[in-house]
Length: 422
Image 1: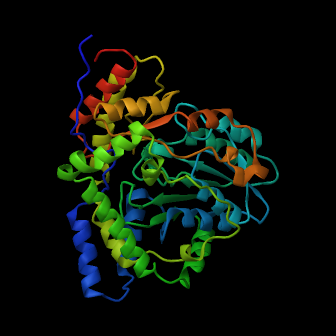
Image 2: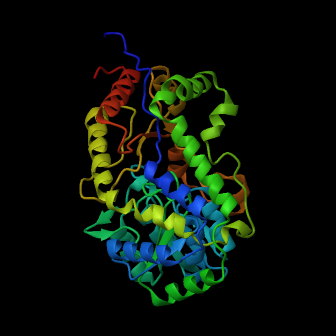
Image 3: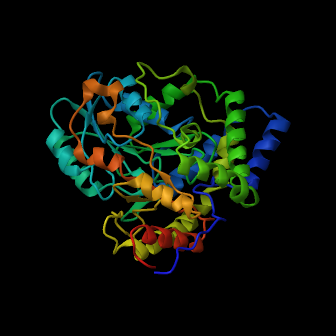
């Protein structure tokens, strides 16, 4: 077999969505310091309703706060919420703070999403809601979930933070349950720095959410400026002229030499904690600036999805025959939008180091199975699939500016790792 080629000018694993115009809009806002005219947030809400078919939409300061408000609107204190353990730990905190008790339903190995058969086993008279997570932009099996929940008259909350733009049979993910929540955070396909959107067709949920938001202040200016600064720094560090010689060199060295102080910089779930209540700074409203930034990006959602789907198809073509690599389902119907392309490998750090060594910038999925976390030990339930998946997922890049040649190089290096020529 010929020697493996090493590519030392890789594209970064992530680049934030948006454009220089995103920062120009932010700069103009900071310089002009306008008052908070709510017309921009109302315009964004109307645009999202028009796109998704939802009856109501409400701008959120963060997606997780939207989940908190949804749970508060739907359950009675002390009721259980059947949910996937494969999620960020702060989503669990939102359930607890809203008065719910998480009940872990194990997940499907291929999609990393909640297993409908587990939901059916766990629903009982204490269940207040079922929460599904459309992880990595892969839609859950909503037909089965809806049938199960309808039979038990239990409402559905959709955590569609990573799935804005996904559709099932033409209906938007997020509108298939009682409440849906999208994220417009910096790593999502709509980047408003912070923020998100809650959608629903239920009048009672809309009233509850509107009343909760009515008296809240806007997002703190200093926190928002700091977040914009983080995004700008990230864009500068991943700018091609700087990324290969500087940023990638540092992270490559850290990965190959196990420098944890550097590796942890990009890991977001290092220190899970249990919160008794929602942090005070979560009780905010999205600013008109963020709404304007989001509005500017809505028109690109479907075209960006089309590019990511092309990348997903190429990953499938190149990796489907490999023993030892598990791939997500390939669907071309719009239900899977592949915000990232999650593969599963038993010795994932070995694969990541091999790829970094050969000039490929990739990352593991840093989420854990919440059913295994010490802060939630009193809620433990054996979820073997979630446990295994949480130790196996590697995320391959799919953002639209990545390029098909970069996808092909990733495939070539992964095949080399498993001893297969391209």
